Length: 306
View 1: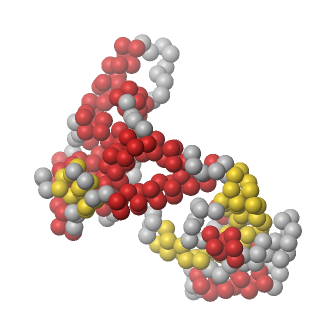
View 2: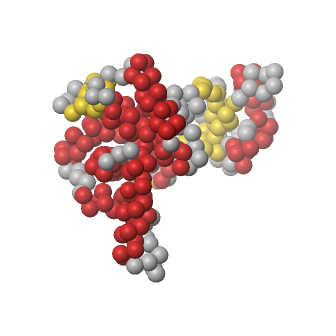
View 3: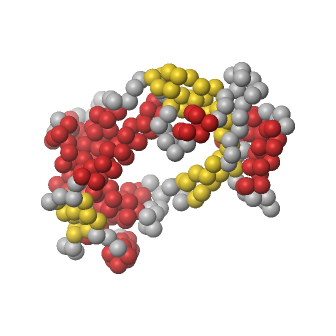
């Protein structure tokens, strides 16, 4: 189907191309025994198409380039792994790679050119992410954060439980004790500790965590800490809202950023970059409920034929 669904300046992508990408995602999910969320995946991929093309068009501005050799190496890594067994001859490795690659392309119904383009997009994304990450300081202001996610329990709502937690804390019950009583097992194991979190990881919560909440008088104790009102969080993975209560145990004006939070900051930086690029470039999305219904029907037909 040749109708375009994404336009980025002079580059367009059709319904047929989107369908190929969805088939590739579907095949990958089936290979790992997982199910693909068809409710959101088509819309996610439409947006990803636009973002990938924005990155591709902007790459020369940052002197970012992905070579054919890099694409070859990445494809081989995905198909046969990083390093073959020592007793395997180069000829045998090449035969195995070609066989597996042909099988993969046939399964996902992509040409080699189309697949290489997708891999190039992904590598460009990684290169730009690293480029933007270089601007993130090694050391940043941070808070040592603790939290309790609050959920409904029996007849008590999350809001009622949050009030219980805050009242108990005000009466002198320590935060670790409240974690044991109210938090899920994975949070209990960590005693509610999120870790040293730098400013910028959660911009919406920064004013609360860095400016409003009073840390403990003594980091080794819980005296003097201020507990937050329940904060409403949205989980894009399951499209559900939840409540979370926070406590800042201590603050640091300058502390080295942990790798996991540096990764989050890089992603935030890329999100901001993409928002600005969408503003200054001609980006159009032409994907509605009718086109969504068409790709879902085509996917179901493909699945039945396999």
